Image 1: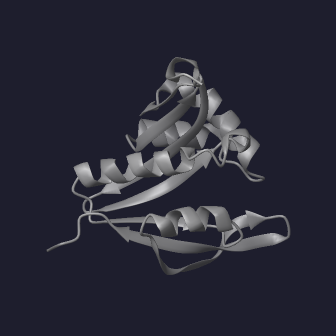
Image 2: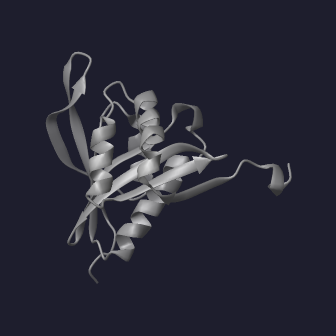
Length: 157
């Protein structure tokens, strides 16, 4: 296949006009999705919010808050129909690059222990287990713990 016929992907800053598409990706990906209002509030708060477009359709996004030398990757999501194509890694790399630009030293995130694919992605990017948050996530049968992961971005030399 020639390069001109391959589907085009790009990662760009999230805009207010993206909120419905981002909410659709979120709803298709999670049993207990964030509301469109939560995503809107993150965007209004100025969090580092990116979308991944695949053939002109928003197919993934990431949201990261930054405070001083720490960042918190609040959400990274890829539509189920576009998973296993490297889009999650691309979104993660953009978030980590943004953290580095902002002189962040550590990035934190939470992930469900049942999400082995996400944990493998984060571990391959240098994240290490920092702890757990008991009963953090809603689950079908009550609550599920979160695994807290952390990665050094700009280690102090």
